[in-house]
Amino acid sequence: MASISTDKLSEALQRAYPELAAVRAAAAAPVYLVGGAVRDLLLGRGRSDIDLAVLGEAGALAAGLGAEPVEHERFATAKVRLDDHEVDIAGARAENYPHPGALPEVEPADDIEVDLRRRDFTINAMAVPLQGEPRLIDPHGGQADLEAGLLRVLHERSFEDDPTRALRAARYAARFGFRPETETQALLLKADLDTVSSDRRRAELLRLAAEPEAARGFGLLAEWGLVETREDGLRLAARAAELLAEPPWRDLAPRDQTMIKAALGPPGGEVELAAARPQQPSLAGELASRRNPVELVLARALGAEWLDRYLTEWRSVALEIDGADLIEAGVPQGTAIGRGLKEALIRKLDEEISGREQELEVALAAARWAGR
Image (tube, rainbow, N blue to C red; front, side, top):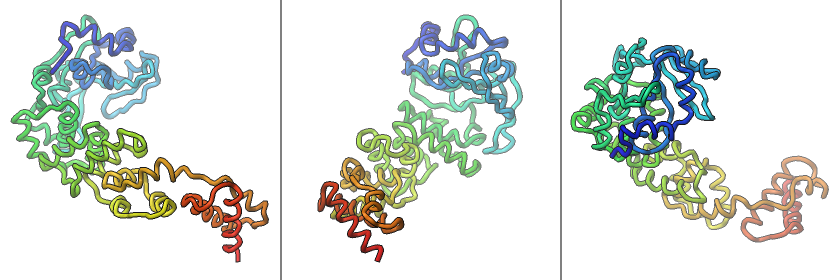
C-alpha cells in the first residue's frame, strides 16, 4: 500500500514539510521525524502532525527555534509553532509501565531505536533523521506492514501496558482500511480497558469519533468486545456521518460528540424528538429549540424529516418588530413584552400573519392580555 519509495524520501520530505529546514539549522543534537508523519509520508498522504524526537533536551531545541516552548516536564516534551504549524518535540526516551494501564515512567534514551520500541504499532515505529541524507529507520518492519495493510504491536504486553492502544487500533484500522495481524488480533481480544481511567478512555474514543470512518471503527471495537454499542448504534452512527457531510447539517454539531453518542449512547432527547410529529411550524420550533445540536442531528438520523425544514426555514424566521416598538405603543417594560413578541412569532411561523403592521397588532393584543 505504501506509495513513496525510500529513494524518494528526501524529495517527499522537503515537499511535505519545508519548515523542517529550520529544525536542521537549529538542532545541536540528532533529531528525527517520527511516528505518524513518517507513516503518512510513506503512504503518500501528504502532511500529518509533526512529531520530532531529539537525542537531547526538547526544550533546548524549541528555544533554538526561536519559539516560546510549552513544555511538559514529566515527559520531556515541548510544543512550538513553525510557519503556522504546530510541532511536537520530545526527548528520545525509554518507558516502563509500573502496572497495567498506568502512565509510563520515563528515562532519557541516547539511541532513536530505543525510543521507537515504546511505540504502539510497527507502522508508527519508524523515523527519518533530519541531519544528513534522509533515510528510513525501520527496526520493526513498519514499511512491510504498511504495504500489507497490517496493524502489528511491537510486543505481547503492548495492550496490557496501555489498553488505550486497542482503541487506537480501531482508529487506524478504520482510517486506513488495515486489519490486525493474527497475534495482534488475539491480544486485542484480551485487552482490558478497565485498567485505565474513564477520562483516558473517553479521550481516545473521541479521537476515533472524529474520524471519517468512525462508524466502522466503533464496529470493530464492538466486534473485539471492547465496547457495547447502543441499540442500532452502528447504523445510527453511519447515518449521522452522512448528515454531517452535507448541508444543512454540515457543521451543525461537533462531529466527535455526535458520533460517540450515536454509537455508544446513552439515548437522550433525540428519541423523543424523533417520535414527535408536529403539525405546525411553531410547534416544531418549540420542540427543536429545546434540544442541543447533537440531539438534533441524531433525531434526524432516526427519521425526523421535519427537522430539515426547521433548519432551512423555520429557525431563521424573525419578526420585523421588537420590544421597543411595544414600549413606544404604551406597553410597560416587563414580561408582557416577551409574551407579546412570542405570540406574534408563533402566528408568523404558522403563516397566520405577515408584515410589520399585523405583527404589531398581534403582539400588542397578547401583551395587553398578559398584563391584565
